[in-house]
Length: 179
Image 1 (cartoon, helix red, strand yellow):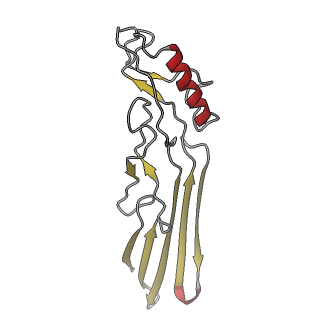
Image 2 (cartoon, one colour):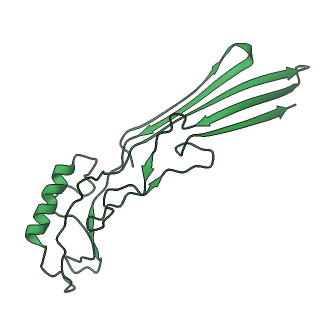
């Protein structure tokens, strides 16, 4: 998961019976390990191999960056490309796209404004409006980290929601009666 996560929530009572609620959620990108599909280097039967030549497994977004991946791809191409793997399959030469990312961070700020009406100290009507992801941060997802895939490091989706944090900006109106 993400190394850095910040969640802040609070409620502020405002004049005229208004109440403001805020939820802010932010997290950094999680660790990942780029791989190569269709290759079995050691004969163990798995046909997806992590890229070799990096200091630790899952070190990308944890100390390894694009220059480390470029060096690992160059090492792969010198060491394995054009040869056969343990199953007798040709090992592909790898090429990184000119533009790629190691995932996306997450950010969503949600607010709620409530007005409460009281009758006879027993009956209450709370009318509220909520806005989810009011800054409309894209929160991209669906990244592919298989180097020999044309979509390597490209987002294919945007976080979705059904009135919840993270998806495209959404507005919801509602009311609650208590007695």
